[in-house]
Length: 215
Image 1 (cartoon, rainbow, N blue to C red):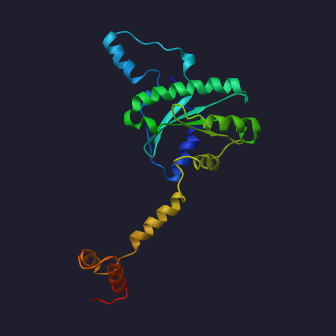
Image 2 (tube, helix red, strand yellow):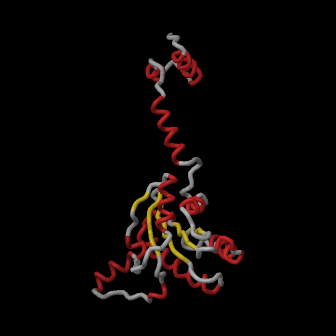
Image 3 (cartoon, rainbow, N blue to C red):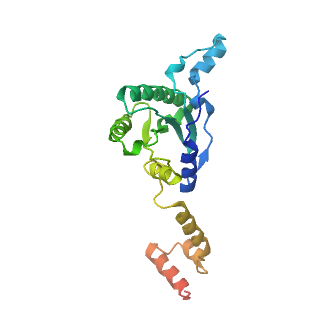
């Protein structure tokens, strides 16, 4: 079974701070068999064997905001041949994952973590741009890590993804809390239910109620 990427916990911690919902993904997403192959093995009573070199040895999975995500690593120097070889394995893994996702298959995303220190590398930036422009199988995003990446660095990467929020999670929570503390004026329910009030009339009525003027 594949190992989870070393920096994956950092990404999950950053996602939690942003306010994303997190759920465990189906373990089959990081397995070696297609959905149809499992049934085929039961029927034929013979196991399907896949070359280990076809799939990545490091890959994790999670559901963020109900979106299935594979998380992987691309190690080594920024050499096109080795990066393309690694990318082919992750595309294979994503293809297997899609077979288990049903209607959610088009939503699958792949986060790839480049080597630590790749952030300042022109070669890695070029390769990352090429990877992200490749939409085969699923959407891909590359995290170019700085030296000793922090949770803040992980959050900056997530700001480029669907996990990003238009405002920080603590501010949005505070806004929601303030709404619960703001009481509407007495009589607002009757005003909303009044069929004779159009939108402008309703606004006027609520303003009058707030000012203590009842009609």
